[in-house]
Image (cartoon, each protein chain N blue to C red):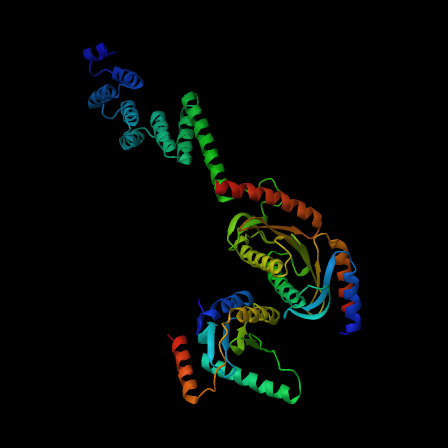
Length: 117
Length: 257
Length: 154
């Protein structure tokens, strides 16, 4: 997987208004593969917690017959965390503010996942 | 009636006299008349029934119960004994037993309006008790909300079920297992929001290959899960989740109150 | 489950680290392998041996890094099928220390590393500053080691 594919893909996600950072994360390890982050976003923290959240929710989805995880939206008072399952155990992650257009962000994340695959 | 009894102590007028005295709350006198009549008519069901009624009015429920049960050994479908035992069961909140006996009494004497009234009273009490139970145990928290019988679950922060039910694709109840996993996911959501300084977490939505999950905290230390098939749009899931959250909040407040 | 610590200031940061990252075993030790604090399923490994080996790994890795003329290493991680073994170096007002963490599949290296940084910051904030020590005599070292063993196995 080459940086020239990852970085433009992440860049397009960050152009969605309200997105403060976009990353490719190794889901099992919770480690950063590539990132495009605004100042103040702790990439290693986002990666680790996104991986852990995806793992926990994935187990919950399996036992509730919701199937394999595709997209996760954690909404909080001051922002949101979006996770999209990519190929080869990767997660496309976006950190956003509260008012982000989730549908648009998800669309760009989906495109990024397809480019990276 | 007293004069007639004095003239003929073996007369059955003691039944009417005893009942009249009982209704006038002259229970000691009613008891003496009933006992005196039983000395001459020891196995007469009506006499025993009278005595049991006096005992019941005097607060001697064990004595009343014993006497009515004896009546039923002599006359298994004696309406008075059935009504009396139904009354004792009602007082002890055993509404099922009361209803059984009253329905037997009604089948014996369909015209007996006292039995009809007693049945209505016992049925209403049984319904109220059932509603209280369902409210207390959360069996009906989400009544009227789409999916209430298989796809909405309320749990506490420890992963224990508070109410609602979740079934798998075979229709089997999987509430407890699901609650444990969802609590773990909610804990992780809380931690992620805290460490990443996103504020208090509000909702956690997961779109899976086969269905949607919507997880939210309707109250402190409570977690709500709404699950829907994939065909249901995410916006509709969120709407259902808001209705379910309102129901959960109302129930939780009732528990706390 | 409580930590066993030589000095009280180690307790809270260690407990927080274990709680957040879910490590099964954590040791905090000096570069010479003297265990200052331990927390977790300590029966799974021979703690003193693990500390000595961890210190040895840190020392040998530091030498290789020096040979390559690189800045000193900060973290090492080994991933086995069922466990990960994490070794981190950091400085405190009490001198350099090592953290050895063994973790399972229910967590990740990302989380361990994330909360290791918090552990370092917490220990740095909590560590009391002491005056520089003179050369350590063999007798002093033996006495200190025996005292630390006595504390840990009380």
